[in-house]
Length: 287
Image (cartoon, rainbow, N blue to C red):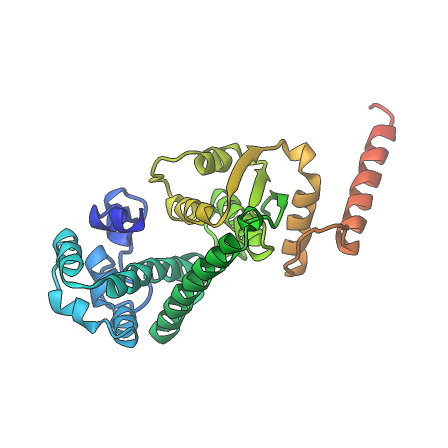
């Protein structure tokens, strides 16, 4: 799917977003030297040139072509299976780390991106070997049996002290973090619940999202394949009180934490203050 989007120039580069009147500035967030279009993202940016060099794939730049379709078909016609696997993973990680820079302000060198590509391919090979071993010992039914979980998410937004532009984007980013959390915990069947109907509907949809949060939604969609099953469900804010309180308190304290099998003291105190305030409100005599 990633290669397909690149080949049709469907990725939300800044040049494409400018056409949609989503952004004004089209400079590359990595080098800030040229406009960020598909050609620059995957062929021309100094960081990307470093990636291909460290992967021993500099030859892909010899087929430099501003027509991205011609560039891809030329490489697929020339490379062997191993090279094409590295190439596809390289494209994926280059785009993923570009989004990390844009949305999380995490700048990664080309050398580190190349290292992650190599590590990911090794993990794929190890996973394949594990599956074969389990199958040969008649235990294939144990593959992908690490359990299920439900993750609630919510976002709190500070207009004056945030790298995120609006509450809508903050909610989408919180949903992405919920999906990442499930992966880090080794969950295979995941239900993600949030109180933003719009974000949940976009996560449920299989169509390409072209809104301002499209890149985040696509990151969420790309991580679905890490699970056996993922469901996104809407929950009213009144029933999402723990996630809401955690988000609010985290924003106040500048800390990052989540709720698992217990309630952090900070959140418990906030809930008690909230309940006390509601009791006083109901006890107040009418005017």
